[in-house]
Image (cartoon, rainbow, N blue to C red; front, side, top):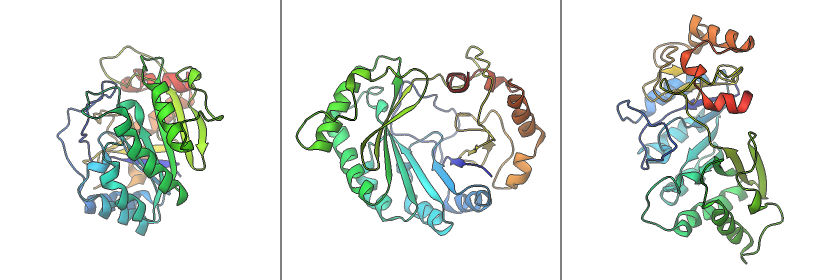
Length: 291
């Protein structure tokens, strides 16, 4: 059993964040029938799908159909988004039965040149969070930029708290002075029921041109697997170029993918405290989280 599966329904994004690895792969949207094939194969292994790897999932023109497939198969779905399209996608998200969590990468705002103000960006996100949280959906406002030049974080927090309280007063549950000073651990802080603020340090994506980090452990293939838009199976959500190909879920079974020699070597290596794949040895995220 896996805790979750990351399925990249598109590798296309409407932003170009300075911290994001990006991809040189051909831009594409996963067809709903291909998604159904992948989802059917993944369902015996996990009940949780993250519509996330690269790309902005709310861009997908057939998002409603994809969410419908998830509902049919009784998946709990997490959507990770930069939030810029949340007004357009709100009805689709709120009307589906499978939506479990929405993660808003708020640090994307400072990483782009935008033609809207911070307030204009945040208010639709906060409105969606308020409505969806009342339906039991978890909303996470992510500021994964600790240790970076996060000049907007305190302003972001003030706007969010003002929207939550309705009077501009500071919440007792958060402390803007501590933003970005979280060490290496991800921290969740409740804002209200089903709404959380999440801080984490900025990390360096695994890249063949990066310095070796030599992490001792990783949860890839232990609690997660990734599926790229073309069906390529990868060990985790950070293999942006599909460099560690384990097979293709459109044509192979999950059993054969997890049971291939390369996958077994990855798990065995980390069980022994070493990364056997060159890309894994250059992963700043695993080094930050697991040492």
